[in-house]
Amino acid sequence: MASLIDDFVPSMTYNSLPVISQVAEAPELYARDLQDLHELLQKHHVPRGVSIRLIHKHFDTADNKVMVFDRVTIPGLRVAQIMKPIVPTENSQLRGIHFFVGENASLQSYEYSNYEVPDMNNYGSFLAEFCTIISERRLQRTFGLKLQCPNELDRVRDRC
Image 1: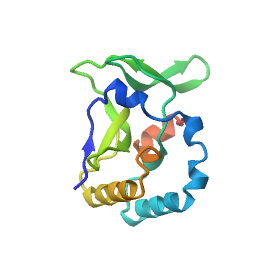
Image 2: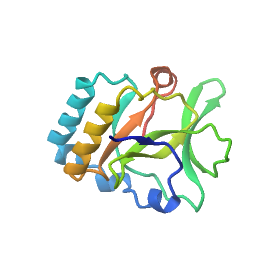
Image 3: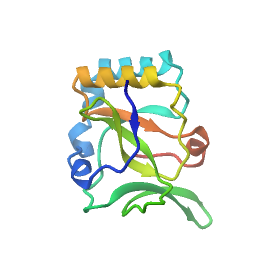
Image 4: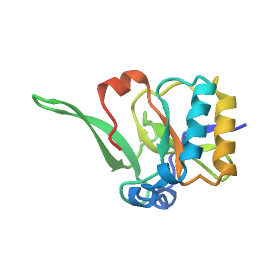
C-alpha cells in the first residue's frame, strides 16, 4: 500500500525536478490522465484541500536546504505567501504539502510549510490507486499531490 513519506527530500532530488517551462504543456498533453486523476479524487471523496499538482520547482536549492512556503504580512494590504529555501531543524514543525510519486510507489514530500494538512490516514486506498496510476502511466515527474487544509486555502491563495 502507498504511503506518504513526509521527511525532507535531499537537495539533489529536489534539483532534479523539472522547472515549470518543462511541464507547462502537460495538462494538455496528458488531459485524459489528468481527468482520470480528478475522477479518482471524487471517487474516494478525499478532503477538499487535496488536489493534483503539476510537479515543478522554481529554482535549485543548496545542500541541506528545503523549499518552504511561508506567510508574510504586507502592512495595510493582506497576507501573502512566499517560498524560500531554509535549512530545517530537528524540531521543525514543517509538513510536506507537495508530493511526487517516488520509485517505490510512495508519495515523497518535496516542498513544505507549517500549514495544517488534511489527515490522509483513512485514504490508503486512494493513495495506493493514485500511485499506481502515476507509476503505470509514467507520470512521476509530471503530476503529484498537493495537501492543504481548507482554512489555509481561504487565508492565502497558492499561485504556484
